Image 1: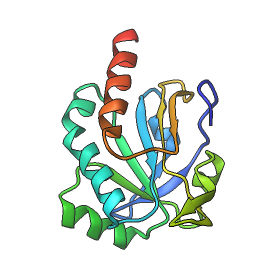
Image 2: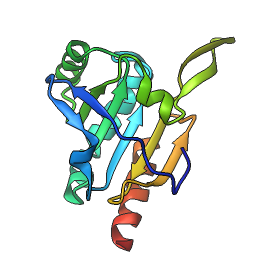
Image 3: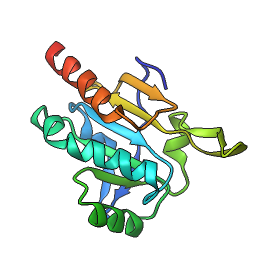
Length: 156
């Protein structure tokens, strides 16, 4: 997905089994990031960094959603074990992940595999992508997203 494109409509379950329809987010700027797997080192680090910045996002009414193929139950355990504040959405058939271009071929331990390409999007109040990061490196990423979100908040 590129800046200016309309983010796809989605209906996914969160870690509590509650359904989130993206239509509920109309008129709200939000961050949505795609990651490979609950409980792995890089994914835990990324979720903790977004959790550390959670209050700063919410001060500007910008919710943060993490999306992976993991089940609702796995998300609940991951959230509880790490005291995460962000919402985790389950995309078991990776349909949303594919729709935003966060699924494809990547190199892992020297082998080409197909899977989640770590990606983050800021979606504006109008449902269009305002910022996009693909092939994300975890270190410092949540801060970079926060800084961009703050600048977009100030502009609006």
